[in-house]
Image (tube, helix red, strand yellow):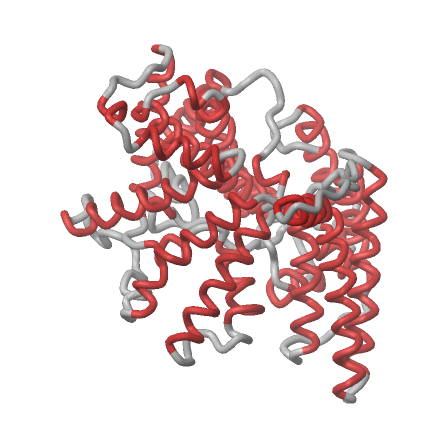
Length: 481
């Protein structure tokens, strides 16, 4: 079920009413309702894959309990391996089977021994990369004795399947989200209003910015041979705002939706395009995945408290895994490798944590140094996005070849209506710049205004949403990951 669909517009109010009026004052009933609603939400896409979700829940629920009950290291490792093998095996089969088969066959063909392919028409279960990582983090934390296992199956099932963030994150840790299912929850009007405001901003980013940028980004990338370098560069910029508006918009909707039910999810985006270097960008982009790889891969490998070569190795592993996590295509791996190369100079010079605070703290405008840092970082990110969006490596190289040709000086060849996007993107950047110290940009906006002007402001946002939204439902980009 898509957030930006009529189905969800019916589903959410119905679940909300049942949750607060029928199940109020009964925490266990609320948790059960969340599980049933979440399974319906997920099964609405394809009910057959509910078995995979349920299997992940069952495996890690029982494995974690057994791990906690034994102190024998060998038994604990076997149990942990069972969870890893099942979850990563599940993810590997559905997401990477054809990738490995195709590359295996191509390798033999390259050396003069062609073999027949045996690819399968495998449908990628939506959200599998997210919920397998979420449930894995629970088992890993129990194994590392950071948290205790739970015997409440319904609460654990609700934690794994919680519908607001089930299919595209944030990837929640059990230490943050699971305890919230054991607390009594009462309706909080101010918290609900806050959630609706964040959802509204998420819909603006998805349906006004991302979906309209997608029209031109898709056309330019799908017909790149027909366009000049200047147009291709503009297409990359459109894609940069498409993927940001799409994915961070989903996260805003998910976080706001969770708040309607009394839950607090972690922040997943923190104004990444205002980053002054690539290290800061990765602290602000898809935070839940970045910190997952940091805590469960980078740190166990030795982190940055090691020799220079070990730090380089660990960084490359994390970024390559991050690229591979996104999909079974060499473009994602190159995207990860590029970001590692951009990041390593900062790490090796101990400058990777020089920009920890908010840019232009306490000022209306950035300094010249901050502005050039943001612009340089955005251009580096843009290089990576071209590989991320390209169909294959050859396609990406063709795009770069045209961008670095004399045609970069041509006037972009686009329909006039594309320039309507410039004001929309500018408004997005201005509002996000003003609200960059807040959990989301319009968090403080209009709070102290007279009620008439406050509601007029929200009405204008809803009007803009209605004016620029597409009549057809458009899936979120990260559903494919």
